[in-house]
Image (cartoon, each protein chain N blue to C red):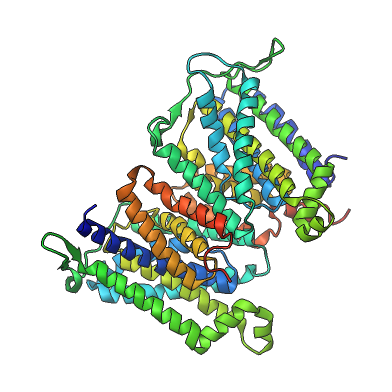
Length: 320
Length: 287
């Protein structure tokens, strides 16, 4: 069975049908539809980070570099006033991001632990200043993208990206596919080896696996998906700016991932929705939302040992 | 670049580097001894600067305000270690990261709640307000020289404390083998509280010292935090000597690159860090 924990199955059966039906009730209110869309896009990004940190044990504070690159790459590749195909450009953006990740991963994976956190941060900061200090890329203000791509595949066009509801379903589908993809990856032979490396690198090396290659492949996969999330974000709002690459973006993604339950993959969705939900709710209630947000984060670290997913699992699977 | 301009930039770089050392030393001490990655360290720098401003407004004396601020920082450090950090020693690093990020939120919120979001300033104390002439046209503010000397003095005190005193001996012992120290009948928990409080105080003292030199504003902690991480990692996590060398290096590189290559100056320290980590993946002075 693909989803092997009871809590995970329950979550998936609650979340996805609910997410499928939600736009029917929100038809009048496109604000909430776009809000949910952007949370789902970020959840996809957090999920790719969750795989890297929780499953591979490769902690990075530079993942937002790929989120930003997804947007900037699309701007660089696509002609300004011609409509392009969504799927073709998805392929381009992911492939180029993967190639960049291959080079950077080759360098950063030589270090480990806290040093890897810092060297990934260093590369991300370089990319950040590269885009924010340059005139061609619009500096701090970023760039606008005027044309949204069309989504026809074999002559069949399912989504109209100018329609928020269609875009919502595209993102939901992407999120679901990413979840299934990671679950399949974890179950595959590749995923088993990655798990073994996470638990005991020395012993896995002794078994004859080239652990560097497995780590590099994981890094490339997660980075390409991170870029895909950034690409979706850029399409949703029609702009890119350097704050997408800022270290605070990586930091909050890491917080959401830890909050959701590191390495559980579906916890990334939980973490992102809880964090963004609290953020949105508190921001509307009080000007000093950060105080309550901070206290809640501290309280959650103290109470939940393995994030929200870990807590739910403890709650639901004690009796079974 | 003329000789005198070079000389001024050299002093600027050294002075900035020394201040960075003061902040980074607390971070590296806490990591080296306790294995705690304190992301809220930059917030302590901010708290120090705001406290200095607050007590200066109330007492009118910068000296008294500095002493009160340092004492309060020490108490904050003890409270945080006792109340929060202590419960997470047996958990993984990521939980500590999450906890200290939560603390950043709280400190930022308290700052805007208590002191507002407008930039504030503290005047340079009267006795140190002059300038030393370097040559016929250039002069250098006395206060900056005073801060540089203060940083050097603190570096010496720390060196002496860690290498020559009983507390330093315990710190070094706790760094290499926690269980063994406990077996010898030392209360390691008390030691950790002391070390954490000293770390917080060092960051706050740096905040106090930089209050008259730059404006006090929201977000000043986060900027300093990232630069300090660069320093600590270049020097090798946990190494005070490494932090000292790395801080001077980062200070000089940052100052000179903003004069020589202004287009890429904000990238320079990260390029330096990436370069050093690629050659020495554990930093310059790792044990």
